[in-house]
Length: 290
Ligand SMILES: Cc1cc2nc3c(=O)[nH]c(=O)nc-3n(C[C@H](O)[C@H](O)[C@H](O)COP(=O)(O)OP(=O)(O)OC[C@H]3O[C@@H](n4cnc5c(N)ncnc54)[C@H](O)[C@@H]3O)c2cc1C
Ligand SMILES: NC(=O)c1ccc[n+]([C@@H]2O[C@H](COP(=O)([O-])OP(=O)(O)OC[C@H]3O[C@@H](n4cnc5c(N)ncnc54)[C@H](OP(=O)(O)O)[C@@H]3O)[C@@H](O)[C@H]2O)c1
Image (cartoon, rainbow, N blue to C red; front, side, top):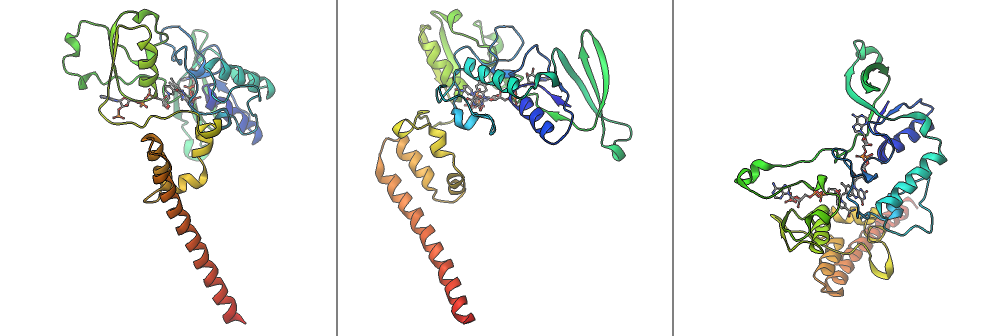
């Protein structure tokens, strides 16, 4: 059984089919897409109206179903929904999904230690249904519920104005002329502060930690993530004196090529020395063998 028909649930259905399993997906709402399906309906989590992906289409695509060429590199949420509908249609996923069906509980079956099976209760059409499944894939989302640490803001209960979590935010209209403080410096905070600044009287951004802010687009119009998030770079990042950190620092400080090239050259020097060292050992062994 797959819980949820968002991006993860749809991928899970595909993987199950490839493995010869029979996936059965329960989706609480009435359509696919999860958070990416923008809606103004209160209580159902969704992105806000203006969201554009911060991961490029090359990075976001299912590995066996690329985004169409004419789609832009970074996508408005409506384009991501268009893609997901194409994906579902192409692989005939809909017949494996049951909408308006909320998974209420998942418990180990009485003979779980022998069978590995699970008892599942689903709320659908006003009644509860019980099922037994061999395996469960939980794809119910990471950002389904808001985290509002009000206890960390002493005095908030005496505050006369309105306060909301970005989870509730859909569009800026009702904040016309207001004086607003946005707390945090994650992607939501920055997006909202910018969007609200066009309609609000004043916007403050409050952050308890620093952040590096840079463009989605890298040199020569390349999507930033396709340039930076490579296997080599993630290996490099895990080492002390990372040249990738050097590149980012140089870029953020707009300090240019010096930091970048020095640290990049240093890293290349270490790699070349290592390869020469391996080659020397191999050569000596071959010589001894002769
Ligand atoms: C504002 C915002 C912008 C984002 N931008 C990006 C981005 O640019 N790039 C990126 O990669 N990620 C981004 N994300 C992260 C985003 O969460 C993921 O891209 C994606 O939505 C995760 O998909 P999912 O299927 O895991 O979860 P979700 O999209 O949350 O889908 C979960 C699904 O499970 C269903 N469900 C939940 N509980 C149950 C239940 N008990 N029974 C039945 N169904 C249930 C829900 O109805 C929903 O349809 C963003 C998130 C937010 C909030
Ligand atoms: N496509 C887009 O452009 C886009 C837009 C929005 C969101 N997203 C995605 O959605 C996900 C969630 O992003 P998000 O920005 O909502 O959340 P987030 O990345 O978790 O950022 C939360 C921010 O709130 C701050 N914060 C948390 N608790 C606090 C407290 N008690 N007091 C003060 N500050 C506090 C955090 O500070 P600390 O760092 O100090 O903890 C951080 O700056 C991410 O994956 C993001 O990429 C994408």
